[in-house]
Length: 397
Ligand code: TTP
Ligand code: MG
Image (cartoon, rainbow, N blue to C red; front, side, top):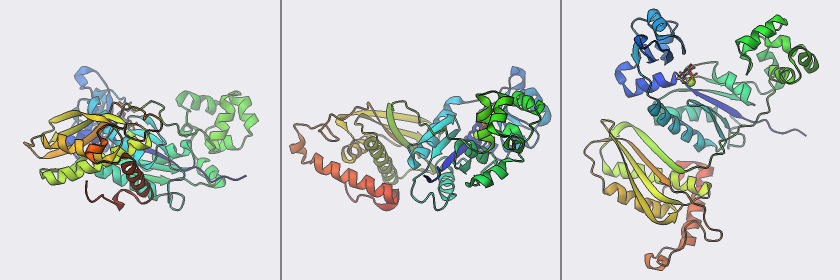
């Protein structure tokens, strides 16, 4: 039986902490930036911009060494909270493409996009679109690898950093030929020590492992590690992409604008789009939300959040939109807006047989028909899944 290959993406943000600092502090752009401890604190470099890498500065290097290599570098302190915020934003973008997202670290994830429409026809297209979306929404660049498995995807994302996109071969003979000249430390899990051990057994390049049988590698490297090493050397890796099992406590989306927006009409439209996305995610997760949250970041980075409980838990667009707009209208806008966010928390499971909203005695009074609303929400979700977000905007709420 032959099955279609998996299509796996590995996405890794470029110089992540340093790029976020350059984004938030435009005067740092184009300059060598080190994120980490100051030399007098005797700490290390967390990461540095590519401008600093040209001087040989690297992660985990003592800051004093780094400054010796690149005296003109600007050192900025680590702001974990901010990087986590951007990380959430990036992971949410990934989840728009597929629910099969496995975050590996703050700036890195695997995505299984097998079966995403069009991905098998043009292997590069989804990765290109994803990079563009990341850039538009966050102002940051990512490097992406496309491959039939996780090991090869991770290898590929590293090939053309920064702002890279690499598609691995998908045919086994080509994969084997691609891997053959690479040093053994490019194999996942082979660190410095293991590489030394392998070198002592005469194995320096991946091709030398390929020449052996799996049984021979097992005799050299042990019954557990050996066969695994042989498989990876031949580009075989059947580990699935494992999305986090954690139960979501809230669902939210946010949008950072390229230029700050002062016009309330445009802001309302942006908010509507966010609400619709959240509504769709709620329905996909089969959850109702009890509380909505609005987030606004002003031009000077001051950020406010406002919460409001809903009359009853819902996953329907219309009550979410009504409540979100009401919350927005209550907010004065002393400055243009840099970022707007919308989320729903207090997630509960719908009671069986009751549809998306729990019924209320007052349904008749509001003139709403829950069954009709639900059918409409579902129809809109299906159309969007098929044709993308821009295909339809509902005319009237
Ligand atoms: P990486 O993805 O390894 O590095 P990077 O994103 O800075 O650069 P690139 O991917 O373009 O090579 O790590 C992601 C972040 O994790 C990085 O920005 C800072 C943090 N980090 C540390 O704090 N200490 C470290 O030793 C490393 C390697 C990373
Ligand atoms: Mg990175």
